Length: 396
Image 1 (cartoon, one colour):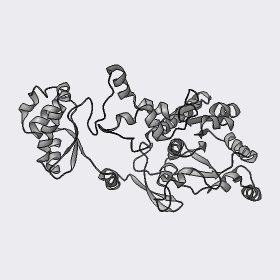
Image 2 (image 1 turned 135 degrees about the horizontal axis):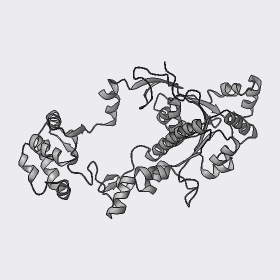
Image 3 (image 1 turned 120 degrees about the vertical axis):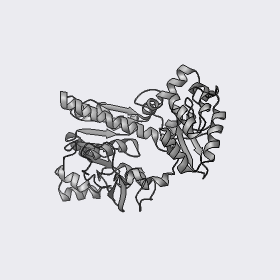
Image 4 (image 1 turned 120 degrees about the horizontal axis):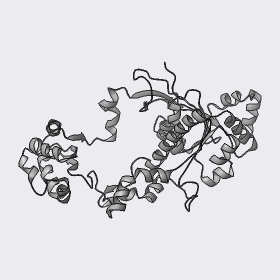
């Protein structure tokens, strides 16, 4: 089987929760050796978020496949020495400590790269390493609120946070891509560049489309549930059997086909209220009522068949519980078996992994707390007696 792209790359990470673990799990998926440093006794607090996967946290399962777990008390001189020895052999260092805590520990990107010039140091923080909110707590919910994400999400009468950790995920993705770019740059030039990512900056970038709309248009896009502020018709329409179908019409050609084939009345396309997308937005209530009445008279299968015939983009409004058995996952073999400390679990095979589609590399297991401590320390030359002494003193 072809070696994975990051085989031979070593990543050392002081991480917890979501953002940094998401970045490093993707590096592990690509074949990097990821050494995850955790607190002795408790570890990454995401281990205790829930116990739904046979006793393992669903969050920890998602974010930590393929890593080695090393317990290490970084507040001790011995723990710091072990970390420095690991960094001396590492290619990448990742941490998501608060900026002030990272500086106190000498683990901010500048300090690490001053000591280890060949290491790509990556720091993830809530609001960046400067500015008035530098040291503010930055949980995903709070960053969603601070950026304005919550203000544009939900129904007209109710704001809602996004149902996944979108600020953490966006930061993890930028950290991941930044590290990959830095590895390429180091290979080409020999220079190790630092990577600093803020959740606030990452989510702000993802909000750029509605942000620019508001800045230059003078109005903030309203909360509209499944509908769209600048496109119509767009959204969910319940069918005769009560199942909503999501419909998205992108241009006037599609609108005419919708009227002719789905509504069965081509004359509606030229109704002055609906003749252009601008007109349809201005008369959205009448438009939605017209389409809604037609869909309410059709079984779901018939409505979807007509939409397909007309070439209109559509989908079902599924429940999350339907996703594990979705034919696009099942028939394309997107599930793999992953061992965890509490037994086997199914996890999703990562998208975009380079390689042949008929090859499935072993992506590793979810580590128990400190599972690889002895192995990692032995690689650094520690004897079994020395490791036992460290454990007796609570350093590992």
